[in-house]
Structure formats: C-alpha cells, structure tokens
Image (tube, rainbow, N blue to C red; front, side):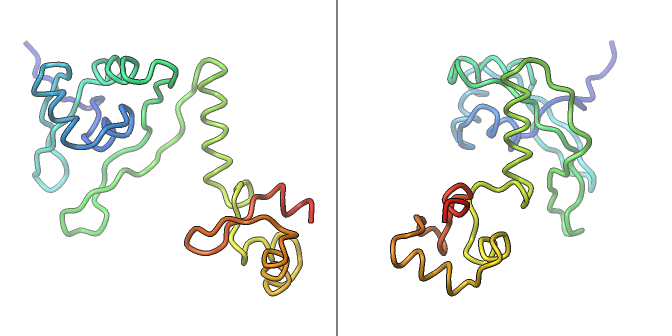
Length: 162
C-alpha cells in the first residue's frame, strides 16, 4: 500500500479560510471526525497538520451553502529563513461556472491597485490629478463621501462623480 504524501491537502490556514472558522473551531471539527487530518513535512523538517480537501469542501458547504468553494492556489515556501512559512501564489486555477469565475475576477480587481474600489487620499489624488489638500477639503465640505478607516477611504465611483 502506497504511503499518502498529502501534497494536495490543505494547510490549517487554508482550511480555516475556506471554511471561514478560527483555529479552535477547525481543530474541534477534526476532533469530532468531520475533517480527516494528516501530517505533511514542510521544508525545514517541520510537520504540519493538513486537511482532506473533500472534507473541507463538504464542511464549508454545510456551514455556508451559498458560498462557492475555491481551492487556495499556492505553495508553502520559507518566508525569511527562520522557520516561518507563507503561502506564495502560483498560476491561477481554471475555474468552472459563472459564480467561481466572477469570484476570481472580483478577487483580481480588488488585489490590483488599478482596480481598487476604495482609495486612500494619496491614491485618490494620483488617480484624479487633484492635490491631496483638495481631496481632504472636499471630504471635509461633504462634497466627497469618505469612510474613516486607518485614514480616509474613498470609493472610486464617488471620486469620479466629484
């Protein structure tokens, strides 16, 4: 019998993201037998818990029936050489179905600066050609709607209306 390598199984962080739960809840799901758990050796000789993607998909669907399952794309590599690892994106998967295609397109738009929905004052000034002072005054006067979130955030459509 061949030994399972668990190469396609999800890491703890990936499983938590897909299911939408915290670390304790994920571990409790595994303890209750709802998730099959294995161990995979990562670079540096460490062993990490990995979860069966089919079980993760099933549990995610049970908890969030309307949310589509999207397998995280990437590989685990050493981040800085001191034993910490991070998920590094690789080539995107071909997604099937309009919901998954839309989700991937939306993720791409939000990740790329040219397609961001919310802009900082500096980004808004760069995009519009106005000064940061003009943008701040428009926010203060109420001509430009903005949200205070670690600095002012401006929706792109609101900036275009100004």
